[in-house]
Length: 104
Image 1: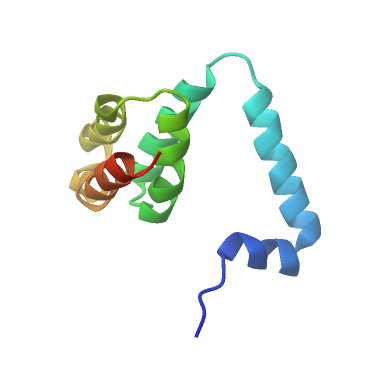
Image 2: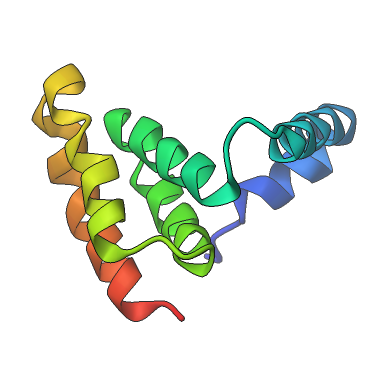
């Protein structure tokens, strides 16, 4: 059984909604208040606080490509500890560091 990419399925099954979502993402990318690297680090922290390992796997390489250091990735995840507890740190930090060390 092959694994279906969830974004491909989203686009196929709900193209209008997927296009709207993609437009929202593009609008957020274009805002000027934060630089792209900082946006990615914040996003990594938010997703880690939710324990979203899959998003971490996708966004760590993006942050690295934008110049984020291993320490910045680690701090973005560790900062969630005081707000959300251990869940995000334990579930996402190992993945984030592994992906960072392997990608690019």
